[in-house]
Image (cartoon, rainbow, N blue to C red):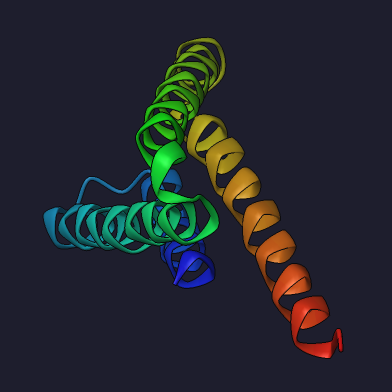
Length: 117
């Protein structure tokens, strides 16, 4: 699910990067971004819940929230700076590239995990 969420995010950010002002394209990009949030964040939460014992789960969810918030802040700042300094296409292209890298890593890890004895 995490990889599916990353893939949907790539499509959403690519849609935003096209720079089109047509409302159907924007609606599609926002819908894809919402689906990406639903898939990726749910998968992250499930991974934390499965990986930690009961006594550490609360702290694990707190740490996950801190990591997500920090990532959201840095990502928003960088994309905003690129948007303002260069163009919206560059800003969202940057975000799409990072999500594509995340998707690649998720796929590689999934393949390696399935091959491991």
